[in-house]
Image (cartoon, rainbow, N blue to C red; front, side, top):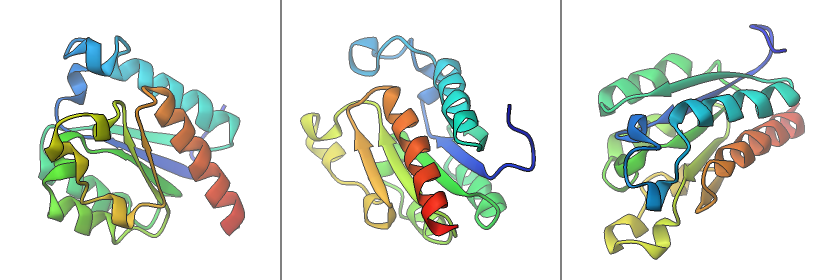
Length: 152
């Protein structure tokens, strides 16, 4: 069991991810955001990390969360949803964090519409995981743990 003394991984979820399991299940699957959160917490606990899990449909709220945790978080797992393809402001906020950033997408964005092929976040990310469904979050938390261990 983790507690406040463990390094924290911030998991940020952007617009429409609150509808996970309901919205386009043929693309995003049937797992809910609560299922993804439980998976992240389980994987993080095994690695000696805690999780700060957040979702917002508002760009500014996500940016505020990054500002709030940018120097205290061990790392960030970010599924910015459609903001991935549109938000320079989110990219600029993530560029200020001290820990690694792993970008995650449930679907394979490269096999989808052309506009989804470009990410403003990838260039500042330590890694990008696409098309692995909820398991992508588990891989991302595991990778954060590895990077934190290498750093320490």
